[in-house]
Length: 126
Image (cartoon, rainbow, N blue to C red; front, side, top):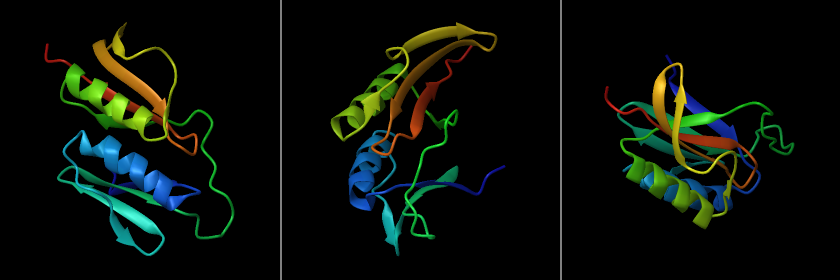
């Protein structure tokens, strides 16, 4: 459905460090520079960070969450830990399983250095 997702950031190098570490836990290589952006490519899609083209400050979307697919609870915990160790802050409940209408999901939540809400989601096999 999506070709890519791009988030606006205020300090490109601070955010690159955060996302290089965070996405590295998912086996995604460091961001590739392209003008005022970094692109992270995977077989299933592209993610990018960019300073806003209009020169105004980047802001996070209230109520917005960007979710990344995670292969295991251990990978989810590494994802969360890498984010916190690189300028992110934990938010919502601690990492763990949550029951819902879709069954059990293992979820981790954090905010990136600009306040964007990030989720790592592992959906166990039934």
